[in-house]
Length: 353
Figure (tube, rainbow, N blue to C red):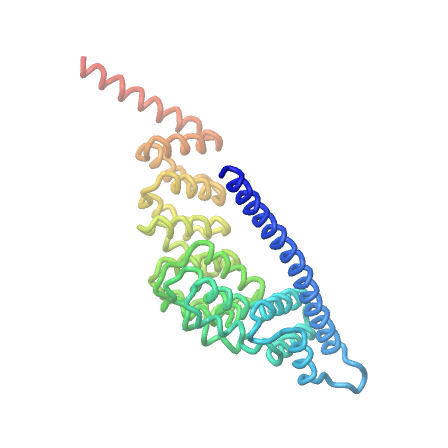
């Protein structure tokens, strides 16, 4: 009985080993075949791009022949992995080419398979496929799908709407800011930074007409984005827009305003306005940042402003104010304050006794 069980066990182990080695051999053969197939697609695509960008004299590219060549290497709707590999090749190629050839490639990509493969992903129910489709569309500069991206700007999934909004900025530039008042969902800090960087990279000359139309938006994330744009493009004439949010009740909006205003030098009138708003800020860290900024850009020490903070601020603000005054030659004022404090403490102690 034991011998039979042992035989069965040995047969079972041999079967497992056979299946294991068989799967390893199959995987190695498949990878080898797949690598050859991808290399074939890559070589074919490189040849097509080369002939399209640099045709022989008196010879025009034949789109029908190009389509047949791609079909021959497996670029067909029934093989989505091959189609995706070609899309990735297209994106990598377009990133590395500029000027007239970039425009030529953009035209070529609209006329060869995969026809609308990226656009078809916009209808997919899975958010990550939809987001990938949007990214492929704007990375290949397929601006004919701008309307589809506009429809997705308020999508419930953060990654889908983020990609859609970035795509709208890439295609429409400064005109895209007209959609700010109509955005219904929160825009993250990363998203704001990405939009500002895209504007700076692709549209370095500010279009103040479209920017200023967005100033009427009452949405906090829109206000924060506009402030970051003003800072990035150093729009000194629009710094008043930032100043109005210095004492905003919302912490994130105040934070953005203090960060953005720190890149500018202010007029005397604007500096007075900043000092008036200082007391309305209910966060000590933000007050300290603003206090350092005020001291940095001021041509002279506003003694009345600092003495008011020294006598009426919280302990941290008092200490920072005393440090500023002391280092700027107003040692007597600091000594008077501490003498005053000592006298008050001494009087209160005598009364309690």
